[in-house]
Length: 115
Length: 112
Image 1 (cartoon, one colour):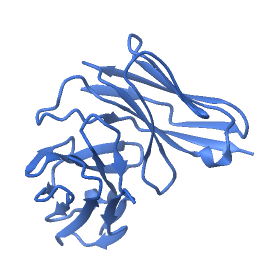
Image 2: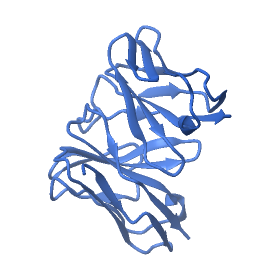
Image 3: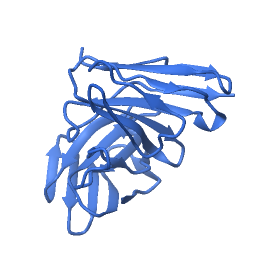
């Protein structure tokens, strides 16, 4: 099984930088995803980490430390449109009973960006 | 346009009245799954399918059925809906099970 922990809510100012943390406990690890979900909409893929280190993609970066069971999503030059929920999802190294490696999602972090 | 199409967007029904939520993807994805999303609980997997005629239970399968007769379609069936199934439902697909998920636009279901 997996236990994934994220802060429930964060606030930040337009133009600033914000870091959203995700910690996980899993019997095995095979990748971590970050998704963005605007209110009333579907989640959309942001990033994927399977090895330690930082993955940069424009204003968004994602970091992973497998030994610490820790990841963060870094958002730079915040814009009002970045107000959304950010979902951390961890994939176990061992398949479920039916053979699926589908990730388990955390409860999400609601980010509010103020002008 | 590559997409996952889910219908209906909103559905209000009464306890015990069978309903089906449809899901179709046009990306030739092997993997499809259904999630429900509830406040404070996040996304929880209901059922998944790794290919045609191959389905299996997720974390919260009770009260739901699925079928995968064709690669593109993966309907979610509630034979006898109950109020505790009031939720926001998402269908998702990926080319393989270890790749990023593409989500449908969601179905807000209310069971009275």
